[in-house]
Length: 122
Picture (cartoon, rainbow, N blue to C red):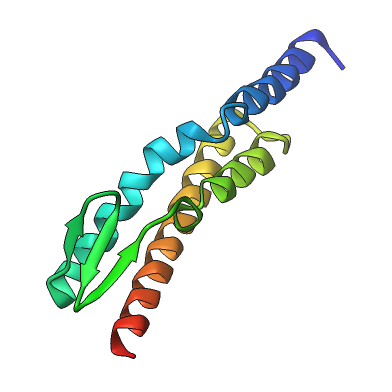
């Protein structure tokens, strides 16, 4: 393996380690508001939901708290690991990350909204 390729491989793995060291803090810092506000917007358009403190959404006498497990920061980290450990060109890697993150984001938002809708109906 030539020096340039081995340096890129080593830098990708080092980046993954640094990204995961602070308990995925960066993922949750960015993704929590990106998850809470679309869910709130959808539920507000359906039910007139309100956002309370600490990511709690109030919908028809039901309180729903968006916890870190709902945000799925560890899943985004896993998708990042899978992407950065697979050999591909930079252009393809960026497109792949955008596709993975946007697809998971959309499915995650739909999942949370579906659960809230099902629990408010019961």
